[in-house]
Length: 270
Image 1 (cartoon, rainbow, N blue to C red):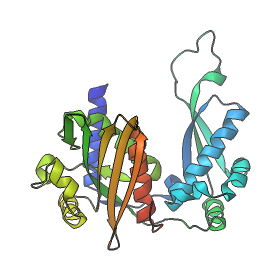
Image 2: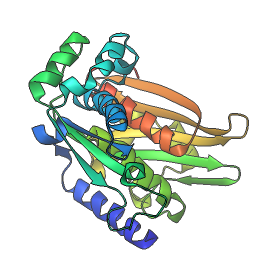
Image 3: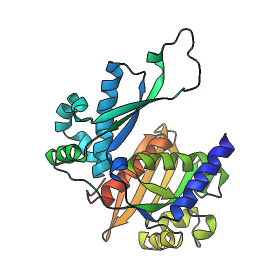
C-alpha cells in the first residue's frame, strides 16, 4: 500500500508539473466534502455546517471568514444553502459487524451549492469569489526533529508521509503543490534555504516548472508538544510570513495552504 501511495503522489506531481496553472471548474469550486458518522439527520446537519465553512473558504480563499460573528447564524441555517448532497460509504464492501448498524459507519458527505447562493453569502460577509487560476506552488521546506534534518524533496525517503500530507492539505482548496528535486535546489542546503530571500527561491520554483514558491520550515518542539512551522510567500512585491506552534505536521501544512490561498486570493496577511 505504501508503494502504491508513493507512486500516486509521484504521478500527481508529474501531472502538476505539466500544468503550472489550472482554473477550477464551477462544479469543483462550489462543492465541499466532509466525513460524517452514518446518514442520520443529526450527523447530516453537522456535516452541512462543516461543508458550509469549507466551501466559503475554498471559493473566497479567505480563512478569516470563519472567525466572523455572522458565521454563527449562517451555520444554524447551513442546510438551507445546500442545493443537493450525496453520501459515499467509506467502508463500502466491508460487511456490517453484528454490533454495528449503518448509522455507525463513516461516510463522505458531499454538498453541492449554487454559485449565486455562495457568492451572495460571501458578499454578506464582506468577501468575494476567487475565480482566478490556482497556480502550481513549489514547496521549499526544511524539517528538523532532533538530529534528523532534511529538505522535503521527492527523492528524500524520510519525507514521504509529509509530501502526501501536504498534497492532502492543498486539495480541499483546489491548490496544487510540487516538491523540487535535490538537483533543482541549486546550492541551497538546509541552512542556506532558511536564509535565502524569496526572489531567489521564486526563480528556482519557475525553473522547477511551478508558478509560485512557498518557503518554510518545521521544527519539532518538546516544549510545545508539536511542530513549530514558519512559512513565507511573496506576492505583489511583498513577502508575507506566518507561523503556527505546537501542532501536528498535517495541521502545519493545512495552515501553510490556507495562508497561501489567503495571500494569493488578495485577502492579505494570514
